[in-house]
Length: 562
Image (cartoon, rainbow, N blue to C red; front, side, top):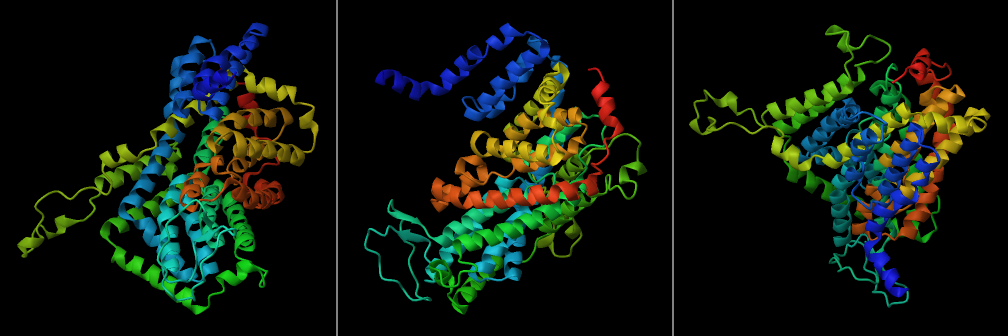
């Protein structure tokens, strides 16, 4: 028995890979219709995604093999999902993130915002949250967290060197060192097993992970889950106006700001003793003007190290603003969008993303050509100036696996629609859908939250849940955006565990935060965030997207035969 246990422990991934498809084979024996064949493939993909018994990008390629062979979808229709408008938009948005990272523009923005907000312990916390939230609106939340980690680590270490805070606590059972007065320099101590992070350390690290998740909901390019939802929605309803950049921001920007406010308050109450002036946490950070002046000096030093703003940073900032303006005014709603000046054909968000990509590759990082006729020979260029971002850098830093994951989700959604799988599931839930739409939304969001915390990443969660929810909307006679977007947003709220989402995992290592500690603070964060969504969304969303009326294109796409 022990030998069998050891065998399963070592080879469990291979066992899941080969045994799971055999275990669910009776589905095809009982009913071999296209809908049930699709259910069989989807169940295989869901378990593979959740367990990661094979790499998720490889799981995402299964529809390319199984859908044509099982008579669900032709190979050309499956392949088209792996490089559609949404995936092209993802490529462009990742290149924007790469350009900001290569030029260190994100660091300049972050340090300046923190400098403006203030440098006390609480104000630094607010500044870190706002900066991470803002950066995460425009680049992937994992990348935003990774970019902010050095800022947090450097700030904490510098404050500790000044003797203003302690990053680590020693177990109470062990003798503790005598405390040093504020302003006394303290050498950084080596990490050992008996050390755990202090409240300030946990506060700062957890805050950037949570702020990145919240910030990612504010803009459609801020999270892979947003782009996955956009692709799934537009695949299911090809005659719809789609998920428009401007409307997404009009709806989710206020939600994001309200959520980040409650997040800052909650984390400061939990870790920094906000509204509890006599608590130990509040006394630990009450260091007077010394801490603020020391922190200000740290921020100023880091800004000085960046030097004056460079030409390449100005170009990246200009392209970034240009991209936002073009995305917003592609279809703003209150005026005709700029594409109408050129064509009557559909112009998607990917057009803007790839246009900006070309600008980054074609623009030099320094305009040395202006010195071509300079009297000073030392200033004359001797070689071509490199571009803002080279294609080699893009190749190295591009998240190719995420493109496959999104493409696999889109292929799965199209197969589910074509085979009638999602319609079958939605019809079976018809009695449940007779409840009030707010109750239906609460249950769907609750299901998404449970999946994203414990079972799957937010992208996989959106990919699994969204096709079913969209068909449930059609059966219930609801605007598909009402349930669809609320579930997509709920899927992004992965606050409970380090394994729930990559930003949590990224901060768990350097901060040494235990899972139980993150679960405690994350539960409060999750309750507050869901409360904001479930209270504000049902009343505000219909004002932006006109969700009280069932559009004609729902019936068109419902009746359309593949």
